[in-house]
Length: 220
Figure 1: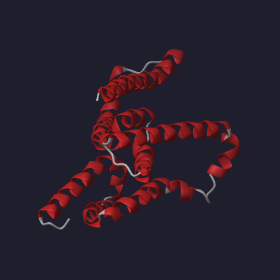
Figure 2: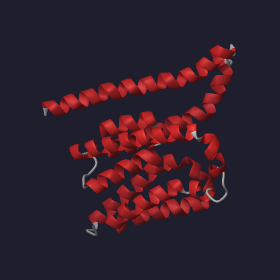
Figure 3: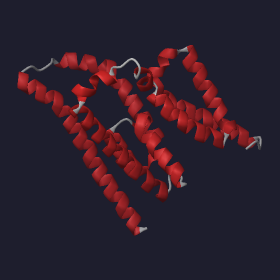
Figure 4: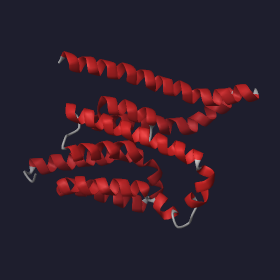
């Protein structure tokens, strides 16, 4: 128990350290540009821009913390939030790794597997991006090829489609309701696709509600 507490304390310490380091680095980019060009935006202009964008990111950020932290664990959550792309890459990698290892989220084994999976994903992503930047001029025609465009447009649906098959097949009764709801709402209001992060907890609440009803009726 003492070792576990020590691990958690160190994880939180280094996690917070890297989170705030990332915040400083991100803020240094526009500040460096302003210093270099001696051009600072007016406070009112910055505030006006933030009012239109920041509340959306704040909302999504809070929702992602509540939704993804139980899945990814302590170490995995810090890694994922620093390196980014939770829904598109980190969460699918962690869930797939735990599924293949036969462990569950919110367990010590799940914590370890999730952290390793997200760390590996971050390293591979960084290497691929670095390689892409180096070879950008030579592979740009390939990336812009009309033949490959449909593939790049469907990377995210393919990732979650593969995960959906695994998790839906485990309990079809619970999965049907949120699946039907999400398909219907996106067909009726396609513009909501840009707010998919906000709708994730909605689907989770529907799943919990349906599971509760089915449990009370002794159907699961």
